[in-house]
View 1: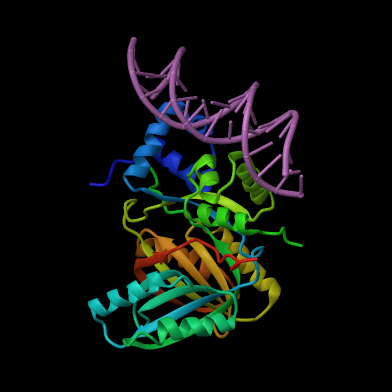
View 2: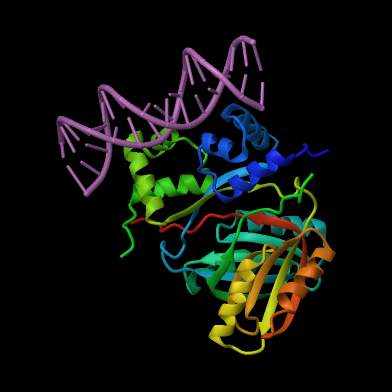
Length: 158
Length: 158
DNA sequence: CGTGAAATATGTATCGT
DNA sequence: ACGATACATATTTCACG
């Protein structure tokens, strides 16, 4: 069903996950392919959607101090349509960088980035308290992001 | 101290955070600059470390089913050197994609990606239980990542 | 998938503001 | 100091074997 990923594709993805600023020539050399063959594969991987996006990661520290919040949200009722509604709200909120739907007592875990506590309070009002189905939430304040790795887990080998 | 970021730099960063696969020409046109002037700025932003990395984001779903775990870790003692040791271990563990040091009862929040529960149990043994200073941990199992946005918060305007 | 040639982009030097 | 223009170099990309 999913497009077959061979060793060459895996090698390409591994490289691009680490650094996608390399030229196609460099990439081709590293994976042992001619530039046109390599380019063709990369384009296929993009078109298939396996490569979703190519982005620049910035140094948030240099951009000015900010707080990372881990927010655990518990909902009143376990209803699919209400979850969908919350997902929509979360996607619209700039401050929410990540959202995981989880099982157990907690229903959602958010990673929220704000400039300061004032901005966080505003966020809580506009996003969390605005949600009628929200029962309660707990905030874990983080001053330090110890690790941030965007790479996906690649299949061991086919 | 930090390199001054003007409106043009901000515009460049905004673009590259969304899509860094654009050519320098396209980027230059979008921010209203000549290609050489734009290139010069991009290089400066990379050199200053403000642009830390350029990466390809993959569609984890297409690569095969996997579980995202949100793990809350509580430590026995609040000691800096022991925290450092844990940070080191976490950085070495491939399964740990993110780690936030937080204040309150919980000391660390991890985002862990594994293929299945067997892999998760192995991870717990090798990373969490191996840590002498670890008091306890709670796992929130996520079957769905609702949102994942790698963009940093840019200064409003200078 | 590789080779070679055309199209395109990147990178440099110079000049102007 | 910074950006634009023009030119040289390098890369991407296509057609063909």
